[in-house]
Amino acid sequence: MGKALIIGAGGVANVVAHKCCQVPEVFEEICIASRTLKKCEDIRDKLTGSRTKVRVAQVDADQTEEVIQLIKEFQPELVINVALPYQDLTIMEACLATGVHYVDTANYEPPNVPKFEYKWQWAYREKFAQAGLTALLGSGFDPGVTGVFCAYAQKHYFDEIHTIDIVDANGGDHGYPFATNFNPEINIREITAKGRYYKEGEWIETDPLSVKKVYDLEEIGPKNIYLLYHEELESLAQNIKGIKQIRFWMTFSDNYLNHLKVLENVGMTSIEPIEFEGQQIIPLHFLKAVLPDPASLGPRTKGKTNIGCIIQGVKDGQPRTYYVYNICDHQECYAEVGSQAISYTTGVPAMIGAKLIMEGKWQKPGVYNVEEFDPDPFMADLNKYGLPWREDFAPTLLDEE
Ligand code: NDP
Image (spheres, rainbow, N blue to C red):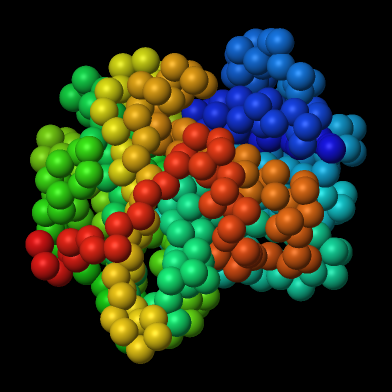
């Protein structure tokens, strides 16, 4: 059917590349391009024997011109951006300049301001619409599958959705005293920020990690979950009509939080540059350099993830409750594609979003979040490509725990 350019060569890109190669009738050729060519080559070398042709390229995606040149040479139908959120806008610009569709998994964040918001990417709506191109934002798991879950609930089970609680649990253990499951910089910036949730038309701010509950998760057991702000809250609060409250919760072990507290207290999570032995360094960048590479956690991580949406609302005048979730096993992911479940649960939906655009099922000129498309083909592909979902019509509600 066509060609896709994958930008980035980290844990998520590894999964995207493997998954594209499982669908050669759609992805006839892929190019894995990133800042460090060797990482692209390492992924390519694991894909020998695939019917999908695989090539690699070096690109600095902070430079729009470099991305434009690469797109002109490779001529893909779309770009799957699984580099870092800092590259979203330069890559979107390059897609506009060359007339190709765009998919990503994380919203833009300026490198020097720890604040992620969709406003910078939504500002491209008209430009993509006029160019007849689709930009699909946030096609990972959360954001991504969580938005599709909400759209599916809205389409099939509710006349009105009133509350959504997104619960992201990782019961995996990698055996290190402290490591992050995806890019440490992005992860730590997200967790150390203030919490925020949407209620009755307003955003309510909470101190970082100050709101905690215990929730019993299938195949994981009871876990501490903490209220965080997460980017899909912004788009879902707009796109789910009649929504009254939406919150996001994530599990963290006491051990993880103790390490984080110490690192914060000594200044290691700061993004303010400091002078060190004659050069300027950013403490968080230095911390990233000394922590284990998330891509190296795969072989060591045991246990499961369980991520889903607990939804309350009304159907035919009656109150209704619905929980839709996926359980994913770290070791099974590693055996299949050589990455742990965090990268797997992000990379599979990125491939599916790209596939649906390539097939024309999710083509809509403009810039859209996942919940703005028909959820049915996406939900079917989740079952087909490794992230089967389960439903529960009588779940325990968070405020009952
Ligand atoms: P990694 O840090 O493992 O990989 C990022 C890759 O991007 C690296 O190969 C890196 O290159 C490359 N890169 C960084 N800057 C540039 C640049 N300027 N030009 C070209 N390549 C660049 O991250 P992950 O694979 O874990 O995550 C990828 C993305 O997925 C992130 O945006 C993350 O926020 C998002 N994510 C989304 C989730 C979701 O559920 N929606 C969950 C988890 C992650 P180099 O190797 O040279 O540093």
